Length: 417
Image (cartoon, rainbow, N blue to C red):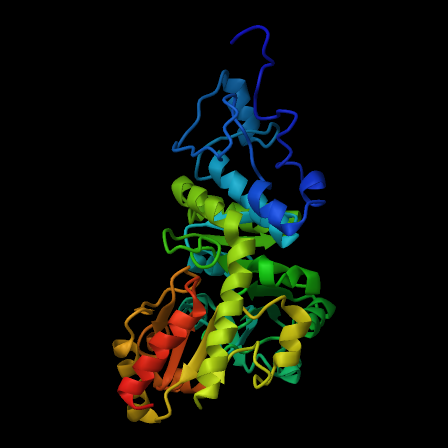
């Protein structure tokens, strides 16, 4: 290195993205672009991708100190990786959380956040309206280890209190819920949980911290499928869990380090790039979704969109969300098998909007939950959760909303709806 140039490293003067006391003062859009950023001696502008499983050490004493927790630094990429660490710090900053750990997928995040703190004999109260795989975890994984649960109508505040037992250790719910768009009153439910020493685990994937921050309403743990809006372009799988530093380091981290549901560095890097535009994408997609939902409602279809005055929890949406998000549900007019056939016919008649079970993408996507995302719940489970055979879930992307409306209009005309 030329002796006239200063030595550059991971603690360069302008590399302030890793200092929480600095990032906490930034506004959300700045956090999304710069929080967590570390730079190597090369001074790269884009976050570096560290594709390595292990690390070398100058001395045996150095590595011993790191494994003993007496010195900072990398040990092994199942424990920590620089690219993954940058993503964790960025999500924590955006969430307003003390700490974050990222995982291999959204379901890894949901499963880890529950299993790391629950034991045989514990009880969970869960919102009945939930992603199918989340319900499967409650019904087919936790119960195998002696962890029971009660599924309730999450929109009913009294039901949460009535379901609490002496051994209740966690409330688990998503808001808005997939695909019914039910909302949980975060302030009430999180306050109830804290008054009884119960941990709240909130799946915030439909909103992200750009549209809703559950920690601001008293939640203990916020879990994500970063595959969705955080990536935003349908490229990689990833999950994230945010909470207090104490809970992350003492409860989740030992579980994750030893069971291994870690996020790959490449996936972490892609999500880092996605987060840079999340404050632009989420509001824009939300505005597009509201415009499309208004069209469908004016067409005479039943629509579940929290941003519409017709939604039974519209007032709660305005209280705890910046915008209602890009995802909503609507219904074919038929019931039973007739509704299912109409819903599938609408999907098949679309020319612009793609059929896909993913959400949060910049491209508009539609699916039939009863035969895809919530198929494994069975007919009885779907009926209890409010998932009808004629229901369609739609993710509105960044296309011109008028083009999406034209596509839906021609599809509805072809089906005769």
